[in-house]
Every structure is written in C-alpha cells, then in structure tokens.
Length: 128
Length: 188
Image (tube, rainbow over all chains, first blue to last red):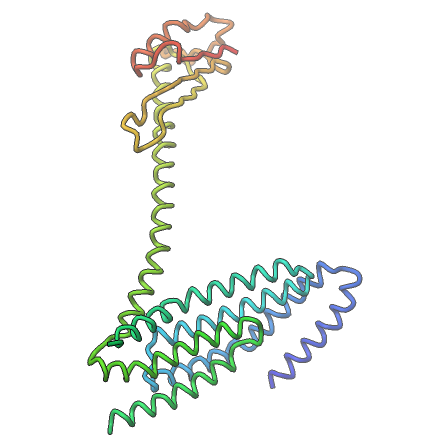
C-alpha cells in the first residue's frame, strides 16, 4: 500500500525537519521541498489513471475536449500553486506566498475567460 | 424522445464528472475559483443542446474557439513585437561590427596599420530615413602598430614613425562622408 510508504516518509521527514529547523533552517526548507516532490511523484501514476477515467467519462458525456482540458489545467494550476504557497509559508515568506496565490488566481481566470465569454455570447444570442 | 434521453444521460455524466473534478481540487483559497470554472463548463454542457434546439444551430464551441484564439493571439502579438525588437537590435549590432571591420581593413590596406581601436556612432533607428548615417568616428591608436606587407617585420609606431593622423582623418572623412570635426583620434 502506497499510503503507508507516503505516511512513513512524511513522519520520517517530519522528525528530521523538527531537528533541522533548530540547527539549519535552510536545509529544512530544501528537505521539505524534496519530500513534497517525492510524495507527488508517488501519487503521479494514480493521478494519471484517474485522469484517464475522467477522460473516458467526459467523452461519454459529450463534453467537448476544450472544456475538459481547460478544467484539468485549472485543477493542475491549483495543485501547483498550492504546493508553492505551502512551501513559501513553511519558509515564513507570507508575501511571496500571497503573490504566488495571486498568480494562480489570475491564470485560472485567464483560462476560464473563453468559456465565460462564450457562455455570455450564447445566452445573449438566444435573447429575442 | 431520443433527444431528451440523450440530454438526461449527458447531464448525469456531467454531474458525476463535476463531483469527481471538485474532489480533485486541493482545499485552498483557489478552490472557489476552480469550482466557478467547473460550474461554467457544466452550464455550457447543459445549455448547449437546449440552445441548439431553440436556435437551430447556434454553435457555442465556435465562440469558445474564437475567444481562445483571441487571447492566445494577444500573447503571440507581444512575442512577435519582442522578436522584431531583437531583430532590429541584431541588425544594428551587425551593421556596426561590419563598419568597424571595414574601417580597420581600410587602415590596414592603405596605411599598413593594425590594432586600431575603432568606435562608431551612427543613427540607430531603423525607421529613420537616414539610418546608418555616421555621426562620429573615434580611432584609438594606443595599441596600433605598422605592419609591413612584404615581410613579417613588425615595428612599434614610436620606434618607427608617427602615423599621419591628418591624412587618415581626411581619407576616412571622404570615404564615409563624415565631417572632419566628428572624427576623433586618440593617440594615447
């Protein structure tokens, strides 16, 4: 079971981090970054399987590919932004974290703009 | 009836899909943004058959593609402007390099002098009608030396002879159509 590996890895890194934060805070940030990337790598195959199933579901529901890809991109951006924000918060860089968050929000809005405008135009076009 | 059945099936699929997608979104302040976008997608998918039915062929995908293309095009325009700027800079740099090489070659061929430091200032605006017109030439003879064309003998200027600065100035001035006062010669 992967979850055991992930939790054990998390606990081990946590113990090392508690010691390191006192003596060497810079290394602690790098270690938490590396641990985050490793955990992400471990769940990546599962995630790709989920995306594959969702893809099939989207095809069956007649959802256009452009919408599905946009939604997946938005979720991916949310994950990556969250990763960066948490890392910055760990390093007590609240300013940088909020900037990354703003960037994530802007990119998500940018990606959803075509859908919003298209929806507006279609609704307006059926108005008598 | 077939149309209605398809539509209901589609809505059920979309509902399941949206629940799974919302579960996938990480729990942060970004969740509401992602949920809004997912909500719009669901709305479009539910509305699309209805609009098609009402309007007889209003194509919502065409609108999405149009807006998507428009947004990407803005980006492309910026990139192409940047590329144009870089290309202009490269043209100016290349022009300057060749001009300096030409002046050096001229000095070598006519006066057998090499190692002259040349600096040229000219109109660098590519849109200007007089692009490339030389404003000023600076020749630095600090490391210059005469080279004999016949043999490999090399002599230092101080040991051999003084360069004929006035003549060099006149030649360069005549060739490049630069006023004499705009040609500066640094001897040391």
